[in-house]
Image 1: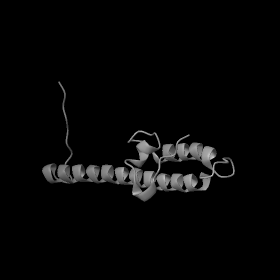
Image 2: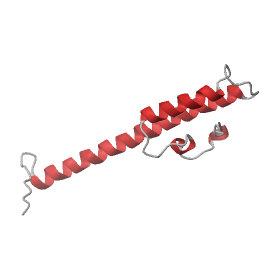
Image 3: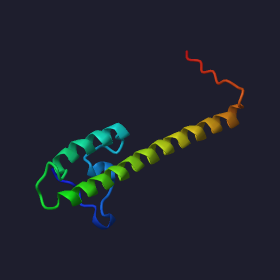
Image 4: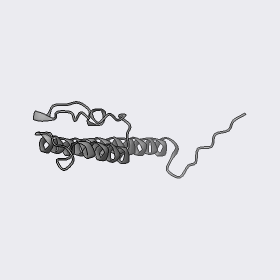
Length: 101
């Protein structure tokens, strides 16, 4: 298992670095992190840099979870903006009725 090197803040999208889609959920991040931790944890791995790799993986998980949180917040903000636009366009108490023929 390869743990991306995060030295000096290097790296791109933390979700991609974990091998996940950019639209991954927090649960998916945690699941993948646990899977990788089982392979690099110093109690399980005898590599000389196991402790360093474990710390990097912890940092990567934190970055990935912040990325998920930011994406969710952007989606929430966009939904709120759409709702505000509809309220301005049609009035807050108005209901939009769509009729299909």
